[in-house]
Length: 395
Image (cartoon, rainbow, N blue to C red; front, side, top):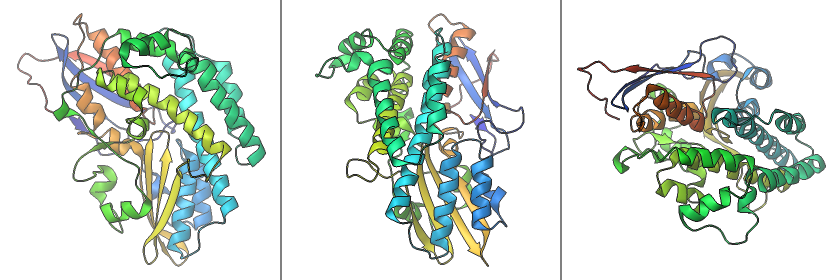
């Protein structure tokens, strides 16, 4: 499996998408290669700017998770300058804005992208209703009410069948019965599960990246990350998956899907849990039951480091200040974890197969897997017949 060195950001200028090229034989994927456009790691774009200028640049030009990018840079710069952490009111406002951004990105996938991929109609108007309001997040009264409406959306529309009984389902049979109880996401999950599991042997599964503090990341990656870490991050010496599945793999409902090999569906269900958790953050940021989405530390004199939870996974940001300007900036996006050559997408793609042996069926599975990983750019999947002497690539 191969990949280019550079990751990309969603909705960036330029027409070059993420490109997946897979070869197949007898209904099984033999090799997978990824081309990732050279438009990523936003860190280099702010070098030479004053902190406030850099923050505004990322807020305007970071084409995915702009709030996360901007707040990470702002907090890292503040710690690099030796400034105190923001006051409580400002920290809570930041938490609500980050949670709203995560909800918006998840709903875009759940309401607009996933339904058409399985033959259902996109819920364009419903998404637009929430999108307009989520963009205005930051004021407590507004956010409290909107968070409640998002919780209602999850319970009454996305996963209705799971909330009309108190007892949680046990086993895949009861899980499917709950899906039949209604909900737009339930229909998508039912259709995905009907296409069968994707068996990933234990030795080929990617480790799940836990939520670490900024201090822990400095201990793991150093006061300043290596160029190799920024491009191909590792934890404990190995690639790791970041994102909703990593955050919610312990959930009993997600675990049911994982135990049956429905890993794509498990990621999709984890997104719905993420939406509900973020809605709770909008209502009660800073409470003991809600883990903070952002934190930072001073990694070394003149160096600040911030860690932010985003819809796609962890975003890490190191900043070095000199004479009041950004002398160096290294930002590691979630895609650098999930879309590297030995990352979760390539590993699980190598385990895909189609019962009918058709290239089109394999292509659809590869597209579902990429959509579940949630790339930051549009993507194109191509499947071609493997050469007769082509040996399967190892994960």
